[in-house]
Length: 253
Length: 307
Image (cartoon, rainbow over all chains, first blue to last red; front, side, top):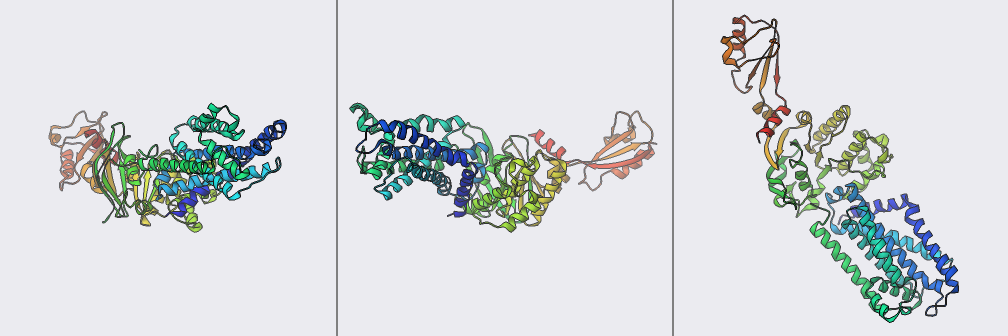
């Protein structure tokens, strides 16, 4: 295995994070803090508890997941799209590097960045709410699996996109609405019965529910279903990436 | 001489049906500089891309250092450094940053001494901490060469390395390439500048419409296909070539002051001595004479025209 190559790609990507600190780290932390202030402290103080949890505290897993999903997708999609856009991808394609090593470098860096942002947001939330994490290992597992899965999805988007607009379409028009409608800000039991069933087609529901269970032992969907769906999404993304490199889709002529 | 790259029956047809390479067979010898000449769209870059793993061949096999580029891609690619035709570079990075990145991609750890040596040989050492966006076009092109050399390759592909580079810098680059050859690196060069191929290459390959028209030692190519001209600068103007000189197919220039004689350098008797005797007998006096070998450019243009 070419570990030097994995390290080189990983370092190259992380260096960009430090170069663009305001955009990479400060901006998501600021916007999430604003959510806490507006929805948690201002509006949340007038809302009743959900499943026995104060609304502001109920928001924490959902907001973390919202940030994790959008950050993972945008970090990874930009990471691989940028060298394609510049043409510098030629160097990676002509280097003695396997598919797995390329993915490890790019996805590993994107997942690391979103985990870093997630950790900062978690610490920030402690300033706004009375935070409790009942199952920290499970919470960490969900964080890692979700950031890896959505970084892989971002990687696929970065290869699929052939312009900057397409690069933004999936995060803005698909990921963000799915996250908002996936129970990040409410329990799906608050929806009419019909919409509760429709919502189950939204993959983010399982991520948010499982993640929230690790905090408060409260979940809209059975925990094992949530874990199963999270692993399933991971496998789907791995299969997608395998197919891309097998066929050379959008990478090789 | 042993072949370090061996290409057998290589073809490439793109999705749209365009056949960029047609049954290419080529051996590239270890330690040589081979120049690939051809007009735009001839297939030079596709050939390089296929060898480097950027383009997937439709048919045929390529071995590099005895390793198949598909089955043993790691071993094969480790031997190769590629300088692309276009200025493909990440402008926000520093010079040493991109060098270390390239080295890492090719499975090598940090080696500041080697990076220093390469940067000094390319006159980039002073700029080692500069962001690439602050460098001139010529410097960026040298950074691309530096990146390709960062992992100490045995084979270097230079796809139009001096395009858009000023004359002085071009000559500096030629020296760098000569030094690489001295160090045992095999260099494959594509270029539009025939002068560059003439100056640098040991062998010349001509590609047109996806086919290799010829591959030949530069010297023998120029001898075989080149002709030599003898030009006589006359003392006095003549209006026509005398009948006694008709056998020599001489050409008289427009002002009647120059006579041109073309001859085959490979023939034992070039006919020059007899011609000069006959010119004297015809009462024509000349004040100077010069001979000129046809350039590689003229040979190349003739070859491509014939296709």
